[in-house]
Length: 133
Image 1 (cartoon, rainbow, N blue to C red):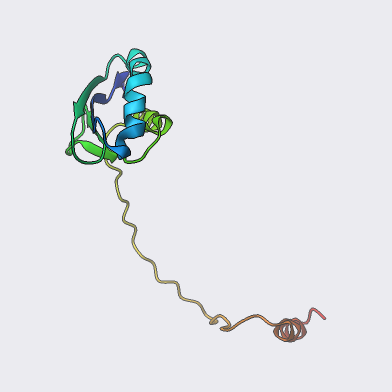
Image 2 (cartoon, one colour):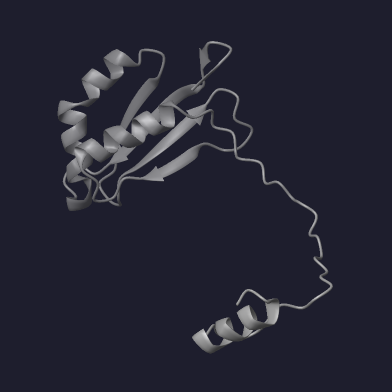
């Protein structure tokens, strides 16, 4: 996502294992789809780091993010899902969402509500009492 025409995603680091089974989709994306993604997103620095142990994950650094970089797991994900995750991160600002705190209101009623389950006999009794029948 861009703010004032400036893309916020600055750097992406892809950690993956060169032989691990959970990194198969990530390796496939790095071999086949990463060059195309980098060509369409020249403003993003992409760094590949091989880790012989552990599951693959993605570290994202945004331009104006006030918190530490995002980390997204890529364990057992397909190559298409890895690309979707990269596109998701590219389209975000990196800012955390603000929680809105609302004041809790107490609702007071003149007549308390009926408690219990609805039965056809209760419906007939309410219709007779209200004068609808």
